[in-house]
Length: 241
Image (cartoon, rainbow, N blue to C red):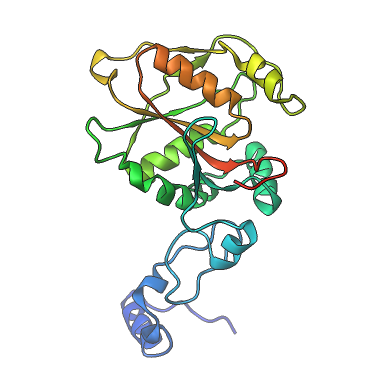
C-alpha cells in the first residue's frame, strides 16, 4: 500500500516530533556541521563544524600550527611534503577540489598569524606563481583564493612567465636555479598598490629556485616580498626541517 505524503501543514508537526527524540539532545553546532571534505564523514558532536576531521588530520600528519623557516627565503607551510599528504596533492593537481585545498590551509593560516597580513598597513597582497605549462597547475591559484577567503587578504596576479622552463623533477638544486633564472616578469599595476607587501603563493617548496626567481622579479619591480606561503615543504635530505 502506497504511503501518501503528509499535508503541508503537518510538516512542522513532524519536525517537532523529531526534536522530541534524538535531535533535541544534539548540539546546534553539530546540526550545522559540514562533512570532512576528504572522507565525507560528519564530525562527532563537539568536534567542530568545518574543515578536516581528526582522523584525516592524523593521516596527513598536519601539525596544528603549521611549519615555517627562513631558507632559502622566509616560508610558511601547512605540512611536510611526504606520505599521505604528498599523494593527496599529486591527485589534486589533476582533479582539484577547492574545498579540500581550503581545508588543508588551516595549519598554514596559523603559521601566518604572526605576520598579521590583514592588520598590516598597507594590507598585504597574495601573488600566486603562474605555471609555464599549457595545462597549468591549478593549485597555486586555489591556495591564493583560499587565503583570500580565510584571511581576508587580496589577490593580485602580478607575475607572468617570460619564457618556457624545463620540468624540474629530475633536476638538482643548481640546475633548478639556472632553469628558473629570469623566467618571470611583472605585470603593470596601479601606482597606489606598489608599496604593498606581497606574499608569494605556491603549492610545494623544494629547493626554492622558483620562489627565489619570482621574489627577485617582484623586488626588482619595487614590490616588498614577505616570503612564500605553500601547502607543503619538501624535507631536506638527511635532516629535518
